Length: 167
Image 1 (cartoon, rainbow, N blue to C red):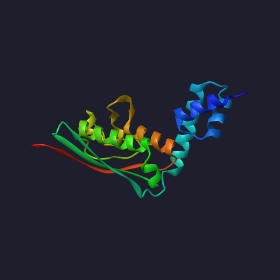
Image 2 (cartoon, one colour):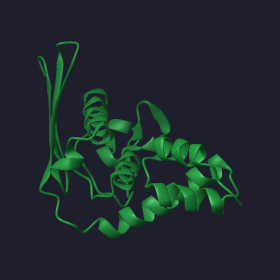
Image 3 (tube, helix red, strand yellow):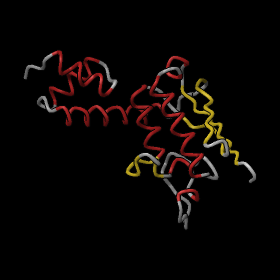
Image 4 (tube, rainbow, N blue to C red):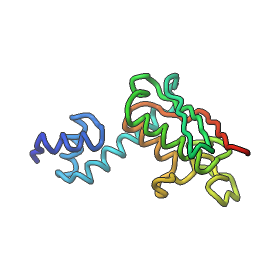
């Protein structure tokens, strides 16, 4: 099947994947953009899992203030300063800071998805297991994995501090 350069470009802009990966995914999906996106996501998540042991010595410290009453500082790490400066990585750090402000988690938790027994509300869950406040179908761990897949690097939420006026 012949895939046009415009279709490859559209998928590349949507996914952030490389040109050849986009073309290959479109060919494998017989030109179906949604199937190609799903193929790229699966491939990216598998690659992200392989990178999970790599050292993460770069990243950002994101600060977020909500209504002048709640403040959050979160450290999100990656492998290179190049990725730390990308909009995808910065968006992740900001979204994580907002999540912490909204839910006041006790800890970061583990990427394996194991939640403590008896956790009834989102703030009783570790940060990584919480449903994302902007999309309850995804967890914070899903956001981290998606960003790792998109950037091609290991991504880790190292630590955070949350301040609340009068608390």
